[in-house]
Image (cartoon, rainbow, N blue to C red; front, side):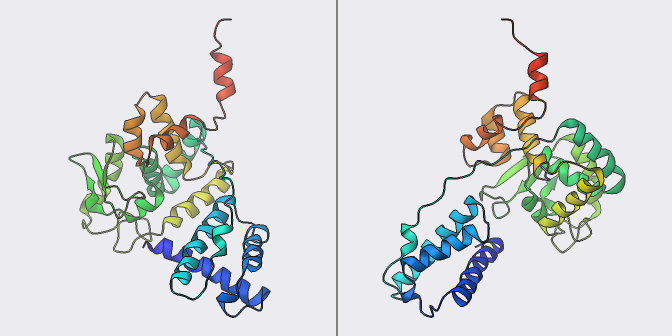
Amino acid sequence: MRPETLKTYKSYLNTFNGYLESRTNVKYLFKFHKYETVCFIDYVYNERKVSSRSYNNYVKFFRLYFNWLKSHAYITSNHFDEIQLKKKEKKKRTIIPIEQRSLITEYLIEKDPLLLIVCKLMYFSLLRPKEISMLKVGDVSFDKKTIHVQEFVAKNHNERFATVPEVLLNDLKYIENYPKDYYLFSADMKPGKKQADKDKFRKRFEKIKKTLKIPKEFQLYSYRDSGISDYIKQGLDLISIKQHADHHSLAMTDIYIDHYDPKLNEKIQKNLPMF
């Protein structure tokens, strides 16, 4: 189990225990009936204001947890099995316009060149922030022009060799003098023995957004979305993009064809067909 998954499960249980202590008189879970189940999950959604996606994750976790309790004879019924999941919210894929990317790049070259490399790894090599935080110096091959993403690093547990273009390899030349077992990014963003927290990248980027007054909808992760979208526009086939991006299916890759494009109206106006 990933540390992040364990942390999430503990959070669910802490929420549950806190609810039991503050909102109910239930001390034994065999007395946690359907009414208590409905009240708890309504509390999660209505008072904790979680998204439909998080709500569904709560339901799925407690289905598993209460099935375990049932299989070990702590309870006789799992009422979470009767809770319906909410309709999934469609993920928004926001593309950062090239003008905004140029503005950010110009700023990062001077103020935070290592964060710029993180952005380029997401845009060109389609790496996720968490994957980048787990990479080591030895994973970068200057000869093969690839980055080895091992299966315990990859989100979908698929080992892959992410392509690194020449322009990005030149930016990474500074790591050649560091030990191969060092993390590519450490606490001070330079290679080191201690892995950088993936949220470190996001927090640094959020500060820069405020400084440059970048719209809120453009997130650090939008660099990966932008890269996928631009590969599609360049004519790279979807199967290659699926493999490069480590998507679990072509349907996932296909989502990027339908995204928010702030310049769509302008493009259509300039490229009207003949009537």
